[in-house]
Length: 215
Image (cartoon, rainbow, N blue to C red; front, side, top):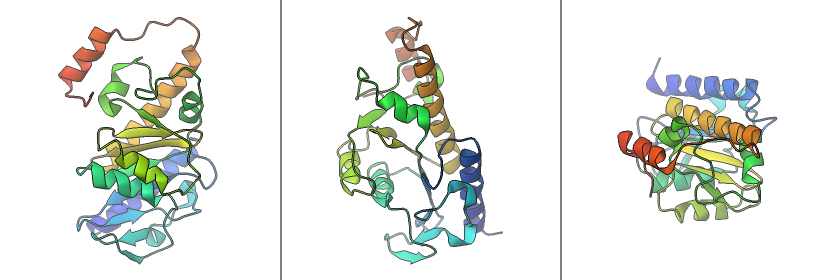
């Protein structure tokens, strides 16, 4: 099996896993990943992540030209913006996961650092998560907003829409997305209960120990 064939299978396997666990319903969510030649494999528009066909993934070359497969997700602007501004990115995952969307709708969250510091792992795997404004689905302005972050964030949540995470390779990106959703769930479960999160000193120790982007 070629490297591209393995990557196609991996995208479909992770998509099935995310769908089966209810992390993105219906035909929502999309995944992209870099190929060895610098191109992209992207999930098609209108496709359920639980029913992906490896042979029908959208294929782009290293110059961004569409080569074949089904028509790509209408959220390509999100993916392209992350690849352009975070040059080490090998994959991008966008979901409509319930708890991340719900947490982003809370009136008192910090848009510059959306997730509260409840565990070390959300800090290690995500750094600071930025809340972006609401955009119509497929609006190219989403990509413009991401570019405005100048590559400083590997994870964002689109208000009233869903989270987007970029990573070095697909498995790590999916794991970071899972951490984002679980942290948002934990934040909602503990909201209003006066829980004890990490202190600023503890946060800084995690940032320093694991070399986390935290500007």
